[in-house]
Length: 429
Ligand code: CMC
Image 1 (tube, protein in one colour):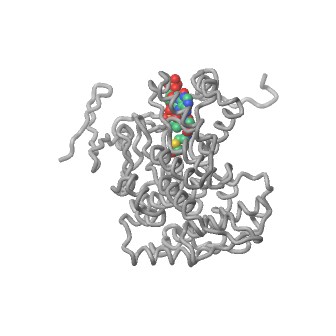
Image 2 (cartoon, rainbow, N blue to C red; image 1 turned 120 degrees about the vertical axis):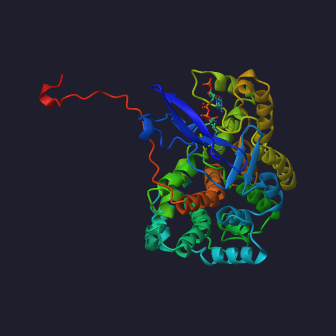
Image 3 (cartoon, rainbow, N blue to C red; image 1 turned 135 degrees about the vertical axis):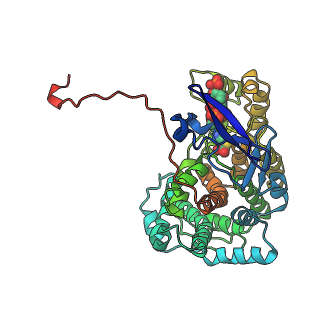
């Protein structure tokens, strides 16, 4: 039986249906409110607005719960692999071994990219940020697969685009990195798993054999799993809204990469290390940076702290903090940033400003320390986030299209000038 909320406007009562999710989350459906009453709702930054009903990821920010298709993130991070998680997110269930093998083989079969992509890539100056290069190259794939321009093709053809994205984005990422270093591009090695192949394409040099380090592969795999989806965040909402105009999947993903680039979103992992390095240069003075973050007249924020949804703890940050310890130990490296990060967390968690605003370390706080330890250059951190988030973006795009969702088009309250007459330029004062 449908329950209703009542809203009284201008003396009239409007019945608004209540929607309940499988985890008992409740929302008020206001989609017909304007047609019936003339009123819209206003919620800048969508702090309290549900844009869709989704069956992909469940997140409870108060309790620090994150589940992909019902599976707790802690179990997936410990027991699964990124490629299996990608399958789970995109197709809804964990694969059987035959399904997993077929999925991996399909991806391997598409891992090469057209040689002409190198010409496009070489047009970028070496100063280009890799996120800009990656989003441009993702869009350029439409030129090599023009049939993808129509996202209303058969499910089989759309699936081909999905496979191509999963297969080619790691190759494009590695190529953009080798290109920026002025080194010959490495081709995919299909004898390797997804993550090992990616790392080899990034780091193998023509002068020596590249040895796969299972500790590094596991660490990167875990980071990718933890980033794989996060329901209706900024970049995912971007992918869904761009796709809602029936823009093709490559263009929608490129838009997601650009949204992720910002330092308040996926670009935060790069900013965290830059901040920790700045603290180190300042003799490890964490207090100075905490005071700066608290100063309302200073735009500085503690990077890697705070979250729109998590108001208790970010489960991804907790997993990464633990793995940072293990990974640094196994690799035998000492990252001075890790010590500073732990001190900063400790100080902030006991500071009234952060306690009152429920600000805790987020996923970006510890991921950068692990990535730095395994040799990923700092400016590539947001790109690693993109590879991790790719299956989530794809799953969300696919879900949005399968629901036949209407074009995303928010409304506004206009607060500009009222109607006035045009004044010729010579008469303007
Ligand atoms: N340092 C200092 N103060 C902060 C911080 C921070 N990192 N984050 C929020 N605040 C303060 C903010 O100034 C505001 O204070 P007041 O109420 O006095 O005006 C209050 O906390 C609420 O902040 P908000 O900006 O209204 O919160 P939001 O939900 O709009 O923003 C956020 C969430 C993640 C953008 C923000 O916490 C932030 O900028 N954090 C730093 C950047 C960062 O680490 N981003 C990565 C997010 S996790 C990865 C991802 O999924 O994207």
